[in-house]
Image (cartoon, rainbow, N blue to C red; front, side, top):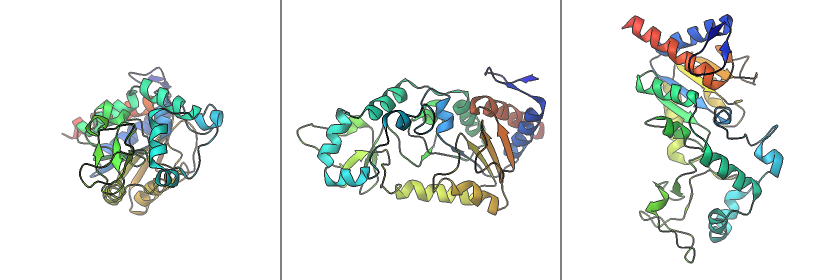
Length: 275
């Protein structure tokens, strides 16, 4: 058995050999991209939305027309944001505030720092990739820390927008459009700037690491298959089999923190051997 550094998970020899092959693919890629989902955040203490222990499993799912509700009553939506009344919203906010990046986040950030990862796409809203040190993250579903204008897509730190409870909703200082949370709600289109950047980087990808996602939510679920159609390699990192497993070039069954840490080590070794 080969212990993986920085984690308590123990990798067996066949898995470590597969991770070594994955590390070599990443180190040899022209344009490697990562796609991450909720499974990676679970390892930082943020519960998933669905499934055992999921926030919506415990408290019930939110309305499927959240964005339309915002458009109908932006003031009411802002009052709910400032003082949440829904149990699931409070539970998620508490979990996200308490979460810290885990070794999986840090391993991906180090791949970027070393020039081995060209882009990272995440379905997560928790900001943990940025906190781990990523210089640039494509956040398909937004970032809980930010506000966004629904007209021009400008994003703001909360302190940059004057939020007066007596004068809601706030308006964009750049175009005077309505400002909401950056989080993409049910029924809301993914912001065009992020979606365009995702398609652009996927079109150039020859290797994709897919970590902590079952690859069932579109459009993100389409990205690994697009890489495969282009002749690229897809490396899945997931504790359990998913719909992507049978199609993936390599499927690495294990926790993201442990597997990505070891993948980083093998990628560095390959990079240094080829230098």
